[in-house]
Image (tube, rainbow, N blue to C red):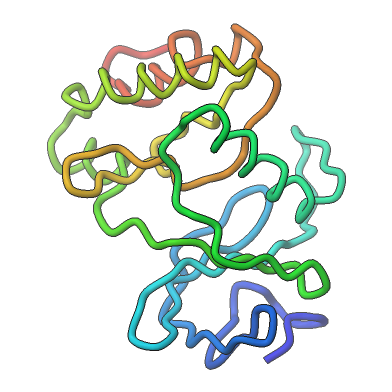
Length: 180
């Protein structure tokens, strides 16, 4: 199935990435850069991300697929725990990455009322990112708890700015009862 000319939120069936077919299972969610789907190939689960070009009032984009590749490399170099990039198809503006199986921090906050037990892990990630001159997107849907370990499932990162680091922005999202 081709995304060109269709609604990316409606991908279904088999979708090729670099010539490999992945069966779309369900939509996982979408953000500023694309739609992420749970997909399967050869009995294994992956995340297939389809880049979109919907307008965003508060963010300026360049080449989104190049940014995904660049940000993946920067996060790997920084040592931030992220899913491995499996494939990147520039022409179709799709990528495939490992699937981190577990609840998001947003789901953890909803179910348990708090994500406080994961604060040491996210703070360690924040320190790794900051040491590399980066901020990551601390929004709680971007973190999955897999086997007790926090995984940052988005590849988005930006140049470090204290206003957008974990203590100044992310903590308010993770601890909503405390406010901003």
